[in-house]
Image (cartoon, rainbow, N blue to C red; front, side, top):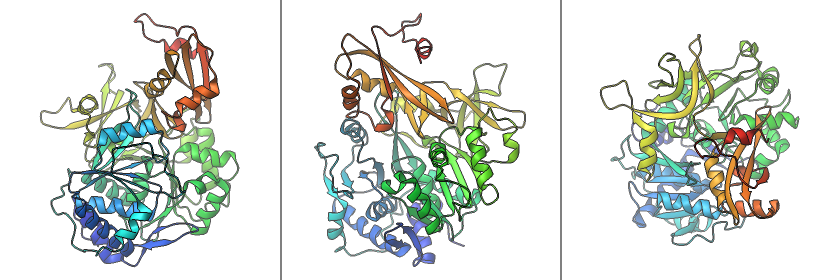
Length: 511
């Protein structure tokens, strides 16, 4: 039994290394594999490097991360010494990336240069290191075994995860050491993680779902299989590699599974070693889910999970059974909450206390938004029914509690959507469109087309002709690809409601 240092991830990792040092922990299909000892030695050297650079507890570093072993080692090094890391998309538009860096104010910026490109070269004012070149310097350093910072507390921040914001400015959710340790322990118990498990690291490391992939595997003595962007983009190759490596645990957004099903890449006889197919982040229509269930329920558990970025990726799970297909017009319920975790429904109507906004409380609830007290105070609030300090997170999800006690999502209280698994505030899309030359005002609408899929339509008011190709080209300098509207429609004036605001209901009649 590994000794648990409940509030310090560095000590928790060290205890695993002492037991499993020679075991492979990170494996690259068609590439190298690395043991816990490898990860321990390189992370220790990065700690020495951090100290030489004057970095210490509470400082922030940014990693433009493409899943190199150096980047993973740096993440471990950071939690050992209490440095806060944030993983960023190196191909994010410069304008948006600059906003995230302005928010978190990293002391140093590190980047993977796997494809020989410097996508963020236009950003100035940061001390930058290319990891591959830095490795030559770091390899010369002496690895010190006792460099774990014992002053790191459970309430200290471990990482910042950026997500879309209603103001057009991304917000950085801050998660603590104890948040992660609770996730790690819950994952081990819920998914019965063993030393022989191999997790499919198909999610981008700057995407919320990757938190589960990385920590639920590495900190539970299992193996993390790191798939590159190119491998994930090639569905046939991806499934072949998963079977070749013998992966046991799959986790992705439903849209990725739907794509594999639609292309017939995923069929009976595939996923030979997969024991658990876990999905979350958006709705999975019952028609598509039934296809998956019929193919794999005999060999795998199929599990729906739920959890906002602000609550450490995942905080509930629900195992799909044949009874769930008696009603084909609903999505799977949220299921059982993590241990020591609870929920509160803030009712819109006092006569119906089982319907309203879902609020979460417990050790998965994060510390707030980094460097953003105003937005933090809006959604990280005092529990209204407790007479002592008890913070809840207001998810914005409208839910109802069914007669069987299970929670079902019925919508949102705002304009947030989930597209391709990403949480998108339509206001951020609109903020980008409003900055395009000649646009007087804009609105973004999400059109659902079935099978759990949909796309964004941008409405713009302008006096000019709009070259859609050029319009989208300008948007790509401000928004990531998944936020770019598929269609752009022009109007002289956008419809307004009685309050003078853009009438989204009227716009939806145009789609």
